[in-house]
Image (cartoon, rainbow, N blue to C red; front, side, top):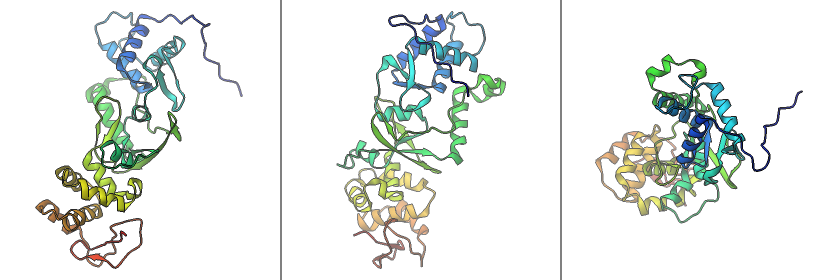
Length: 313
């Protein structure tokens, strides 16, 4: 088997001379402030430069895969980019922009993931626990094509996509392979068919589940949120403050059990009267063995209204 040709490294103190386009692209990548860029990110910056009226000595009307490879190598030889030590393939450090937090790096490397569960609870100030593992949620492979398709239409334009050649389209990765640690921090990614809503965090490149989605996750995966006992403490202390967001998020979740658990907590445990919550009683199932805590065994203590075993000690 032949060995891969090593990348050329200029002698110490000597940098590869950048083309006009390479200089312009380098400037845009630095101006982004991002610690890393994926191949998709770099190609979108290239497309923006091609579409501008700047005189960059371009030989083609649109960039393609060959041009991406050429300028990527040029930027690496000029010490503008380097392979990211954690994500490696098709993910590059923008050297002048520093290292970046684990949260930022993960959310740039995978544009569809977001901070979730106990990590999100800590960011929102809902818990005094400080998780050492960064918890993320991402769409599972069965629905990822939907997110990729929406991104392509948004970034390229639905009509433009129909006119482009195959080598003039770079797609976001179909699956991001997360290492066990990113920037020295352990990372755990839950893939979901219903990841829920997220939003951008101010002043950084990270995304986080909306406050309503975080409360929904507490009921669906309580073990990832400090356990059901801790979840009930959080709901009792904070649910009234975020009631409208919680009701909206719970109402959009696909499983009826999420609505039943939320209904019991808000109605019987906290004592909130709201017609929107009352509507969830239709999801209660008489004769069922549904559990408030999905990780514990059935107990006879029971909510007749919500048809739910109150199996939390």
